[in-house]
Length: 475
Figure 1 (spheres, rainbow, N blue to C red):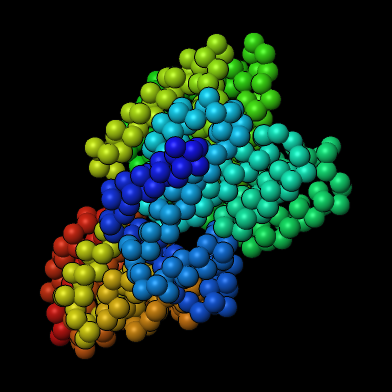
Figure 2 (cartoon, helix red, strand yellow):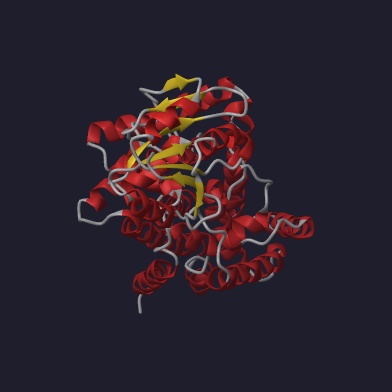
C-alpha cells in the first residue's frame, strides 16, 4: 500500500473511533454557542463572532454549512471529527516530509493514536481545524526549503488564524523563520494579513485587559500541567511529581534536537514548540485565560512531530525521552477509552426536564441568562425564558420574559432593585422555575432566597447537580 493510502486508512480509522466514542454526549456551553452563532444569518453570524472576539467567523460559517445538510446539535460534531481526521493525515504527511519514510510507522502509532487529538475530535470548536493547519504548516516550513513550501506555510498560517486567533503564533513563527529568505514585501503582506484577521481578537483582548480582574475567565484557570495536555479529558488529579518528571522528559527531548549533533528538522520543531508555548504564556499574562489543554493545540502539534522525529533516530539523547513520552501517550489513549471524562454540564437533560415541567405556558428564569438561553434554543425551544445576571452585592440585571439571547451586546438588559417583586408578578400568572449554573453560590444566594420567599418553591432535579433549580406552581 502506498504511503498516501496507508495514511488515509489510518485517518479514517481514527475518525471512526472518535465519532463512535464520545461524540453523542451533551454539548457544552462553548459548543452550544457555536450552534447558536452558526444558526444566525450570515451577516449577523459575522457580527456576533466579532462581538464575542474569541473565535473568528470562519469556523462558525463552516458549522453553518454543515447545518444546511439538516444536522443539528450533537450531530454537528461530524465537522470537528472530519477536521481531526484531516489533521491526522496531514500530521502523518508532515512527519514523512520532515524525517523520511523511516518515520512512517512511528508516526502511525503516535499521531492518529494521540489522546490529545482524540479529545478535541469531538468538540464543536475550532481546535481540530487548528491542529490540521499546524501539522501542514510545520511540515512545509520545517522541510526542504523552497519558495513554494514557504508560500504554502504562509497560507496555512493565515487559514489557521482565520479559524482561531491562536493561529497568529504561526504567522509570527513564519515571519521569523523566513525573515532572511523572503522579500520584505511578502513578509509585510503576510504580517499585515495576520494582524487584520486578528483585529476582533486584539480588540477583545485589550478590552478585557483594560477592564481589570473581573474580566478574568476564572472557570478555565488552571496550573500549567503537561500531563493534562497529554491525557486530555481523562487527566488525573494534579501531581507535582508527575509534572516534574514530564518537564524533565520534555527538556531531554528538546536537548536531543541539538545534541550530540543538530538535526535541522528537530531543531526547527524545538523552536516551534518554544515559540508556540511562549505565545500561550504571553496571552495568559496579558488576558488571564488559564492553561486549559485546548489552548495548547499548536505546541502539541510540534511536540508530537518532535517525538516522532526523535524516535526515528535511536542514538539521539532525546530518543529515551521520546520513548517514555510515547508510553505516556499510550497510557493516555487507554485512559481515554476506559475512564469517563469530567462530564460537561448536561444541558440536554436539564432543559428537556424543564420543558416537561413548564410546557409552553410556564416561565424559566435563568441566571446567568446567556448560558441557559443558548441551551434552551438547542434543546427546549418551546420554553418561555427570561432572567439575567446577579452578583454578591450588586443589583439584578434583568431580561423580561419572553426573551432570547441576542449576543454579547446585552441589548435590553435593565436594572431591577427588587427581584422578589418581579418573581411575585410572574408567579401569579404562570408556573415558574429558577435555574442557575453559577459556580459561586454567594452570587445567587439573595436571588434564591427571594424566590423561596414566595412560598411553595421546591427543589427541581435537573439531572446535573451543577445546574440547580427551584420551581413553584402558578398562584
